[in-house]
Amino acid sequence: MLYFAAAGGTQHNPILPIWQEIVVGTVAFALLCFVLMKYVFPRMEQTFQARVEAIEGGIKRAEAAQAEANQLLEQYRAQLAEARTDAAKIRDDARVDAEGIRSDVLAKAREESDRIIAAGKEQLAAERQTISRELRVEVGTIAVDLASRIVGESLADEARRRGTVERFLSGLESVGARNGSANGSTVRTS
Image (tube, rainbow, N blue to C red; front, side):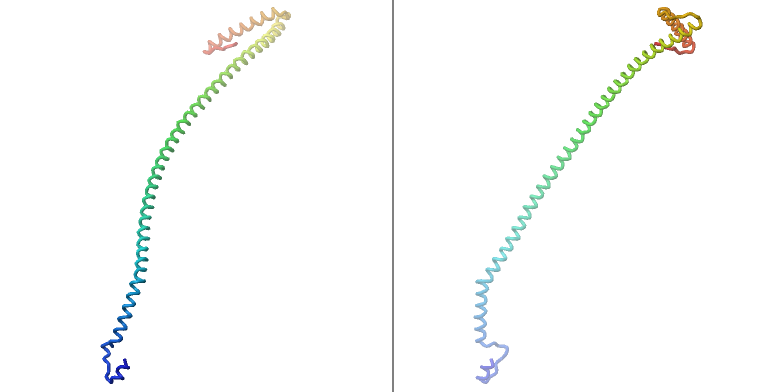
């Protein structure tokens, strides 16, 4: 700038540009626009398009994953409801089985109890008969000994002895029966 001003001797207006600068600036601007349009803007467009596709693909994948998750959730809920139903059925079956087992055990226990009681009664009756026989023999022997001492004769003869014992025991039974009926109860001797 100063070059032209010094050569011409006139001073240059700072508001108006020099025409050579306008030409160089226009060529540089055109070259910059060409480079931007040819190389930079297509790259930026490709990057932007890839970004858009990635975002849209991500959204589609997210929607697909959400749909799959909802489907799996419904399957899970259906399986859970089925499992609860099965568990309730198993629980009810177990209660029925337990009640059946309980009644079987009670029935077996009653049968065993009845059998033990019956065996005890049979054993008691057998022991009562044995004790009664032994007691008859012992009472008879004592009675015969006592009677022979009182009478003074020997009752060693077996037939006599049995007859005497039977008469004595019959007498005792009749006395016991009279006393029992007088008291309101009967005395049983076997």
